Length: 310
Image (cartoon, rainbow, N blue to C red; front, side, top):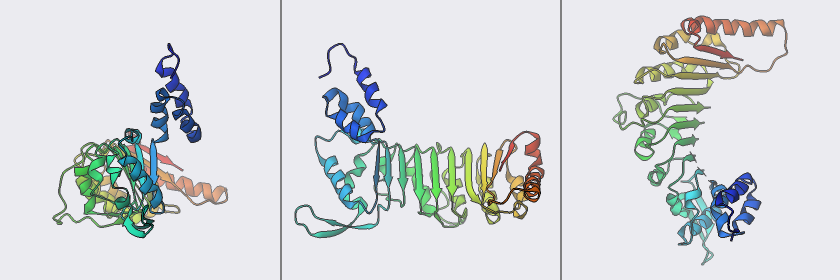
């Protein structure tokens, strides 16, 4: 036990200083009972599971099943990859090989009610209600379409949503699924390495989003973006456009985009040009691209609402 007279906060400060030293944190947890909460807070802050770690998932399930387990409240971030993929795992008692999905191996993961940051590569809808406190969600490689609308029911406190390399189901206003509850708290939406054909579904899910951050933006996506902006209840506060590498700014239908942008929307354009030898010709091309953007967004430029980065 800690010596009398030393406040618990001092021990917590020492343990907090070691937040990145997992082995040391494990030792700290064994010193005395007073050191356990701070050690556990950092040791179990983040958990990552993939379909290649079925044995780890099974062990986690066993720990969560224990009546003595007290770490669940410390887990605040979870990466859960391929939760619906089949996994071969050996039964602990019979030794027989079983085939189960990852979420079937660790069903007690639904006891982690304090998760605030969640990464998924598919949507295990059966356990999503357990993560109702999630504020930051990353979806990687999923099929993005009407299923996104179910996030409103399961993740009502969501404030940030990132989608990476998703497979897009184009939005259809005539679809029976093109309506539903909204996530009123969702403020920031980021998309990377994906077609924007599904973007209309997100306008239904979160029509009051304030910031949209698009990477790998190319000319063919302007129509999808314009449709999305028209569906929002209010104009965006910020629009970040990261142009795809080597994209020619003259090929974008900027006029179409300008027509649907709000007068108070701050536009940030990042031009990710391929590496080339420095010289007068290259510099002149860069200057021309910037000039084109400033002309197309001239009303925003006058109000200081346009930023062009190279």
